[in-house]
Length: 279
Image 1 (tube, rainbow, N blue to C red):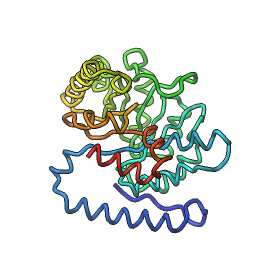
Image 2 (cartoon, rainbow, N blue to C red):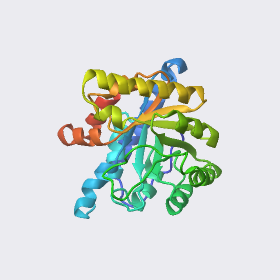
Image 3 (tube, one colour):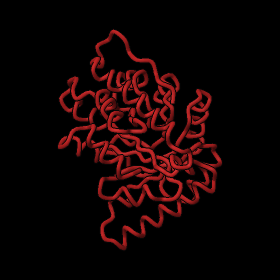
Image 4 (cartoon, rainbow, N blue to C red):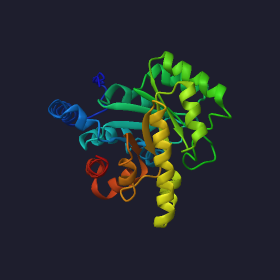
């Protein structure tokens, strides 16, 4: 992953944090060189979603806590990627956050977005490493369910074309549904992120095992279609390991649980603890 240029002379990140990120990147690069490729391929990567750091900031309409600082600390804790969702209503992440993170994050930058023309245009300009298309509803507290590619195929296809033309890898956030996965392959997606919300909400060993079985079947379909396998939504320190262990799992995107844990132990340590569980 290429290192993005740092923001200079703006006072956005303290010098000590910049130095720590540089050292972290150098250490991580050395570790990657020492690790055999087949070993790396067996580990799920951790994408840390920093949206809810911005949620706390926006609650007071102030400048702290800064999600840019959170991203820095997440990298120091071992995050393989930083995920953020620029919503049309700007309820948490702001345009400024995406702009600064695009210039400072040294790991994979994954931008979640709806297929809204304005947001797609912003994504094409900011050029994250990956764009994850998700459904969006102004009334929802958080994303509810996966994209319906069957019902909204044309609109999503148009957004995908713009993003691909900008050189951005595309992941589609989908329920573990056979028709949706088949449509993702037909549309030319690079990856599918399976919506794990139902699994996360289910209680009782038998019912949770049934939901995990659905995810495992969907994961197989994603792999058989030649797509990269991701998963996320509602994953916590208690329920993440079975999902991370699914065959072919490449990336897990987790936010709320990490931010909640960070209040107690600090952001860097919260990420480090989750990283140990998914690797």
